[in-house]
Image (cartoon, rainbow, N blue to C red):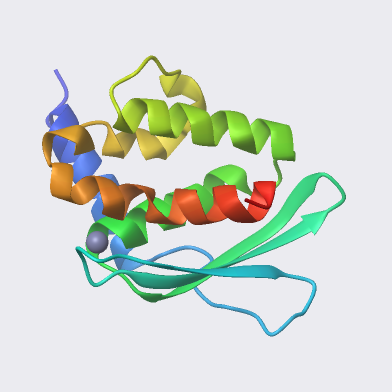
Length: 143
Ligand code: ZN
């Protein structure tokens, strides 16, 4: 038997990315597309940058004011999406949103993002968990 349960594992993943967020620094490079995402229900106000190389996501950056949930969720997202094609990224984003909104999803392709599996139980946290993902969705698909 493992010494931790699933909920503790999810908390540990979120804490790790909150304390040490990946790709958490903007760059001064006009090759990046940039978007600001803010929340009316939380402190979250983040800038996200996306660098494409043809159809491949070469880099994602983010910075700003963000709570533990949005910081960790966006950090995990950067790790999942960098190196993927636009189509692969869209598939991951779709599965993440399906998980958040309790629809069918593939846990395999979500890797550490699975830590947000139970977010639907705290409706106030849904916006925090999805803010970075919504931002990259907009940048990626020019919405
Ligand atoms: Zn938040």
